[in-house]
Image (tube, rainbow, N blue to C red; front, side, top):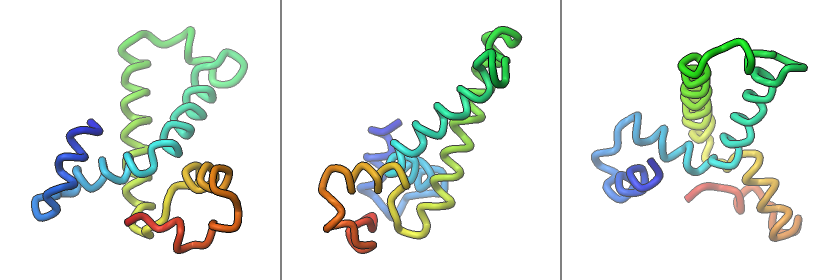
Length: 109
């Protein structure tokens, strides 16, 4: 998926809504990954949602696909602001320090 989205990134004229959404998910990949992990913990662990023992493989796969689609839609909707995801911003601040954490430094080019 990432290679497909990267290839489509080169030709911006042919970029459709699906490609833009996949590119946004790639730019927000850490945030999407963490959000998916939180959803899976909430749904599948026995002490919270408890679905892990009660749904089959097909249903679990369906839940995973819907969760992924939800994160793609969320990333596409929020990337229109031109900002990085919250997890990407936090990682950048931890890596480079707080001195370079101006809003302009967090804009996606």
